[in-house]
Length: 194
Image (cartoon, rainbow, N blue to C red; front, top):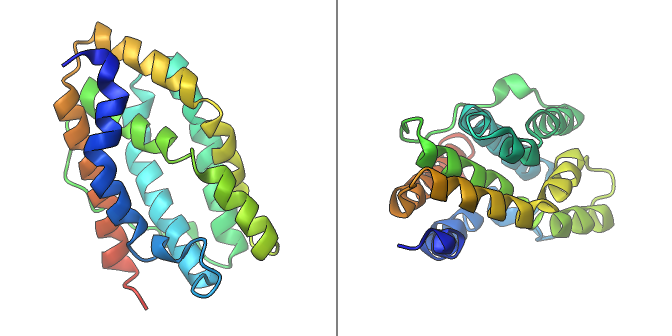
């Protein structure tokens, strides 16, 4: 498959997993004033911290020009800050319930894809929370809005990197889907729906 189709293939091949994640508690509560609570918000932040903690070493293995776009330290700091502001403890964050992935260009790109790709909707969530829940902390969604501004640059650089490493697009997508499954499994194991 043509490496220039990497992102269109990833988007298409992970669409079902992405949708399933959005329909999994606590993420299913976001943007819904009737069901959104501080508990569901805290659970989503803990789940996201589990993902970012798991994905960090993979993203750090990519060229610096790609990893800086993920704003790794800022994202971790923002999640911890928001979790503490919700009167919870980052130490309660579980490990991501994800199949073990080898460290290779495919898994590294999959982690970066899910990380940076998840930032695309961050500005919408941040705006909604400012309007509906102005007393809730949104450092994470604010920094992820900044990460999302790098989406085009990330796609270009990641495509170049994938081409130079002869990345297997199908394997990259398999790993991305494993990450979505890991997020869902983590949420289901630690925060069953109400």
